[in-house]
Length: 277
Length: 277
Image (tube, rainbow over all chains, first blue to last red; front, side, top):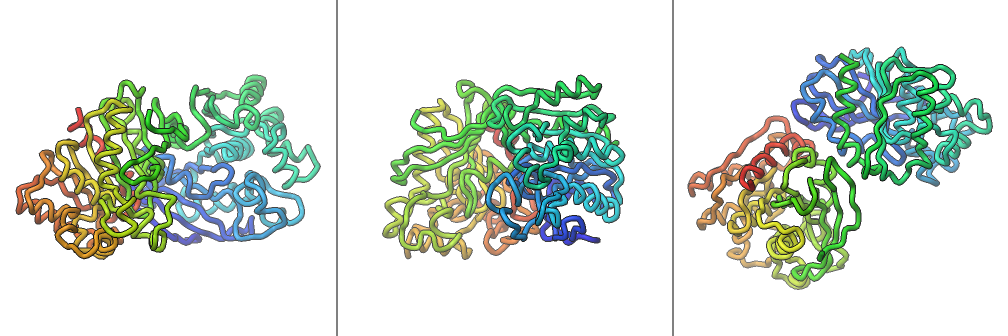
């Protein structure tokens, strides 16, 4: 095993685990949680869950209620932390939407951050390699929430050979056009706006990136960040214009919280199980 | 309404709410969370959930996954905080197992604490009155975890005219005989050991207190506090000796955490729904 299990809790007939491993991409140790619904030898596929701003590896696995719907399947869910930790880069801990807890699932190019904030490579290389080698898995899907919804869309669209299906809750779909994305991309990528587009789901779809499976997206209409940070309609338009199938639902009354996620997590899990089986 | 709703989150077809109200028992404002599965006018019964040491009104409602199993029923769940807050009594904040976050669901008699730590009256009078008056409910069940499992057993056995059914996860069943209970009872009740027995489920059963419904109790065998703090077998023995029906299950591998609770919460909810309908 290339990871260390710090805590494990029997959950349904499986285990919820909290782990650390060394990442060559971030040059730090990285934390993740996971739910293994059955014995590790029987697991054949994984959903990677990417969390939102301020989250750690703990939020989803404690709050979403996903374990119930994965029990007795052969699919695990793995939830990486949202950034490297235990660093003290300039400005890294000054705000909730940049630096620690806000890695934005990209490979940084700016001074200081480029040495560690390589979250794109961390997920698509290090974490996938760990799942292949230590869990014997070669079927993956990806999902996430908010900043992690952005991550799921971007990683899924850019790496279709890895990910069978993509879903997102309340994703930041067009980060080059919203305050959260602009702040993060400026800080991590600098002034090159062409580079920004490589981490923007709407821009990627415009250049022909696509997913064989339809994109599954759920969005609450009482979400405090909708529409200005999320720009959900932009994804709908660009999918239509570029022939990408999308199953996008707006839900009256729901907000940006884990109460929304817990309400619709069953739908997302069943969607991914269908493409992983 | 005699309570103020601070936050509400649409969850399934209902709402998870976070509230405050004034308690005449604790002479403080008290916090609670609740899940209302349907419109408030259609709700006809409530499960009161009592949390364990260090918890607030938030732990259960975010972590247990209970909402899924209550959706589309007419039964709400309400989760009060575990002690008065915003006080600064001598020793109140010095340890995790006494004072704030550790009210033990009793009426304190010792100096300082007697003026506010009246959690027994808070639950059985103030909270029940709020449920009757503001929610129009007159059918109640009670459940809880650890210190809250102790609370559920004690309040349920002493107030059978209020509570239709009692269940507990990993309860402290015999607090007069374990370190947690002895510390708390000494601090809240003083030296009178006869008084201690009024808040001990095993002692109450010995004096003839009983529940018409069987007691439902689940206990993990990998629980870090079993057996020394929980003394589960003592409850089994005293139930047998006093003719109290009990459905007690031990579960290999499960610990004291919310992962254990989330695994078996469906069973407890179905049990209470049966007695509330």
